[in-house]
Image: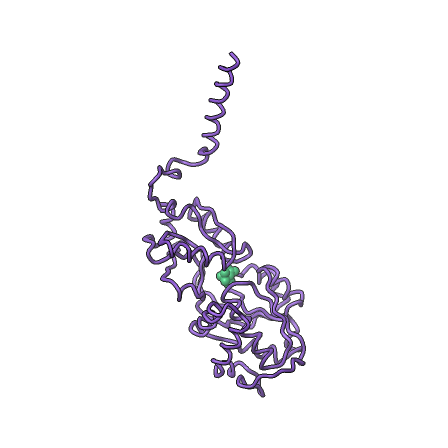
Length: 306
Ligand code: PBE
């Protein structure tokens, strides 16, 4: 009698467990083994980066607007690039939160998935933003920040050098030496990219950035210019995206070179816009979205749920 009862209990519990596991999903979400649905090819995951990044907020919106039953995996630029590499080495499907400028497009054959609902916006600019009062306190620093501007080939070569050398600082030094003409076009009167200084006595400059490949390149190149050519003592502070804007507004940081506008960092800037000064684009034609290797046979975010 007791044995029979526990058998029944066991049966009930088993049935409950089966329901709990599969309860929320329709049969289409749980394809039989060997099924080649698009979602299963991507293992139901979108490989993301740091949660503060604008592209992660945009991806949450994309999940909602396109009805994507995918897990958005948090990580960093580095873990996203590692996941991309691993999948490509194994010729597997992978979808990542991706953007350009980024060295990954030079290394692998990749494509953006079409975004018919325009969740990720269109072409953006990367702007330089400084703290209020910098112009009065450090006019030369303000001037070089204001003049800083480069194109995709130039930032691309700076990012490639950093990736190859595995040392952002050394890569920036090399890049500046190899691009003196461009650097001279940013420098205030009296400086020459060919001439470095050993005395950093012009005052202290704090540059805030996030560990995104493009931001690392922008910030280290400008740090090199400010320090080794202009003679400022430069501090480089890696932070999260929100802290970058808050630090600038609080006057703790002097400049950032990685403000993606109007969409990606639109809300971050909006929150502090009266306390900072936007010096305009240092780069045109930036873009964010969902990126896959070119061998992946879908072309649109809408197809992720096929
Ligand atoms: N990014 C790179 C950043 C801006 C620079 C696209 C990852 C972001 O999404 O906030």
